[in-house]
Image 1: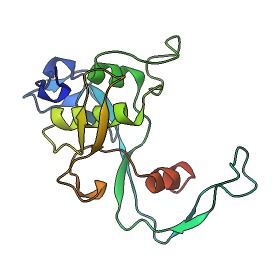
Image 2 (image 1 turned 180 degrees about the horizontal axis):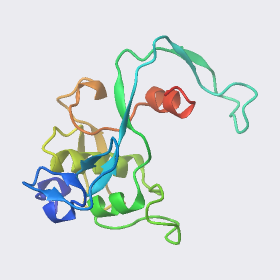
Image 3 (image 1 turned 60 degrees about the vertical axis):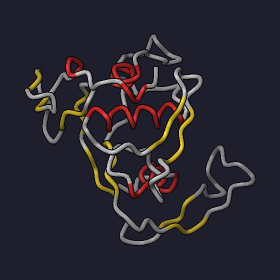
Length: 178
């Protein structure tokens, strides 16, 4: 069936206060909050004070010949999770561990998720927390999910739910701009 017609599964909550009417043990630490699916997460806000240079410099290992650096300005701040989605959390939301490295610890970052599957994950967490969905997705299996920005949104910035970072947001954070 359609992944977006499922009801939130309160039994998967493992930490902190939750929207299911209770508190779940063992609790989150420090600045962490409990997210739907039982993950303790913490957030960092990024909002560069000035434009930054996006793209690989000519000296960077692995740079492709077609890459061009350009000046980019992020016009809005964004909250990013401090660490990647874990295999455990992804599996609790998506219903299966699709990792290509099942021998790795289950709290390692999720791998082998397509953009569409990551968007599906974002929608599921939004649904579980009662937030708006950022993507319109179709498909019934990981291999057939296809997603796009929800048609009622002009840009990803207009969504109040969980979403994937834009390419510029991701690069700014990944290059140490936090």
